[in-house]
Length: 216
Image (cartoon, rainbow, N blue to C red):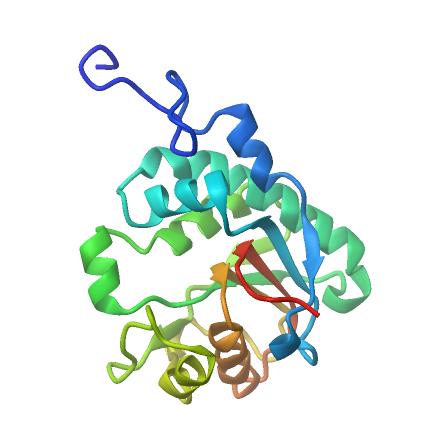
């Protein structure tokens, strides 16, 4: 099959890899980020900066149908989750932790052919004992595509637009880690946190694949 469709790195195009070591390394350094919009939020961690090869690879996975990237990216997420749990043990406690992916619009899921963040979360959880994915959030039909919206309009677009899937919500008091792909303004994470708080679920931390937000 590779003779017909040669496998190439989604970040740089190197033959023979879905994600080469160099491009995969862009997601290997977990760092705490401090966007001003999330100054009062729980700790926010990012695997990469949303630029260059990291951006190219994420777009290939998210919009380009490169499902072969889900394994390498999920492996990076698993490593990050273990680091976060070790660093913030006092926040998450010793009980089960739920990894909650940020929801996507149904139209986007249909266009992509899958809810790729949910798939990444479920693959990542396999390598992290005590963590399970809870796909318990959804977006209101009134939420529109946020591409091109500035910070104020993103917040307004999402205000009250993150809803609970009641049958999938963990028990009140269960610590939660929020998971999103790209941090832009913080609107998605803050609205997800608000929805979870309404169900009695404390958000202990937030993890994004890449950070595009300005920092203080």
